[in-house]
Image 1: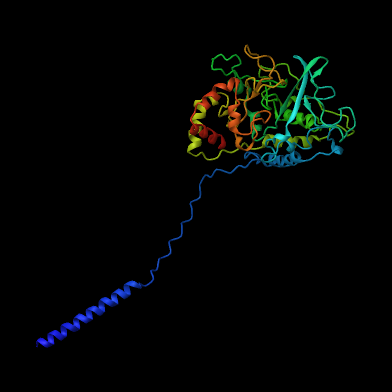
Image 2: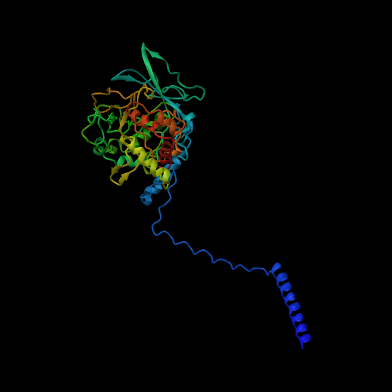
Length: 434
């Protein structure tokens, strides 16, 4: 009996060893684990009210079918390269509108190498163009206004003196046209409400309106042009030598009869003409109308979605006084125009002062009757795409442009310099998102 129990126990013992051994072997080589495939991501729910993407050079979204067709024809005219046989010259700086308004697309800003000169001589109010020139714009190519076209002659020499009178001259860099048609829809009353030519509130800001003789100015580096037609016909002739007849003339004056008309030099009803052998006008009324429509109907730049730095920068931008001139929004007949400008001219100090005056500004007890040192508050929408900066492109970056502010902008510049590096970068990030 005892032998049987021992034998049975031995069998059980060895069987248990075998079981353990088998288990260890199985544990060292487990069967492959099958991982189930994850469920596919559900289809994203469409945004019920998506924000349309607006690219530089796009038309405004509110155009009618006819206006859009006019815009597209105008774009073709904007990039058209004129030939001498079509009226180019006899004096010119460029062969197309897009030569000076191409960055990043037609209708945009100008590269530095596209700078041009303006010059005049005399003493206000008796100021004259250089001899043989039809405007203050100094042509880089061609021959005199009353001579046959020539490709041989170079830039007109700007003399230092004429009849013992000093000659004034400045450089200009082309400015973008995006969204500026909306400036025609901002009333004179809205613009003048922000003017303070005598600095009555003592904040150091004495912005004032300028006038071109046709109406209160909105366009140009000195706000010297009242409407898109004037601002199109002038460079068409002064920069390319393309003569034209008015489309609307004085009927196109924006906010006509605002009560602040002053003597000026604009002649909206006058045709332009030259003597280059091509019959005037050298652009048809239809083509000119389309060209005007392209500039008028270009969409405003679209803001990027703000990140945290841009949000902080927007607040700091206002806190250091930048919005005293770069007003975030002006009301128009189509709603707010968020261009960050007041469309007024400001004295920006001796370092940025030019020599040539344009327009007839509001009377001021603290600024002269001329505008050499004053510049229109540059719109900031889309500003990250239009370097270089300032009226002559002297500032290669936004930071450089800020640090060059003087005169009425000096207090804000000093406040910017007192910020921490992070706060300064926040403001730059805000500007990049406009």
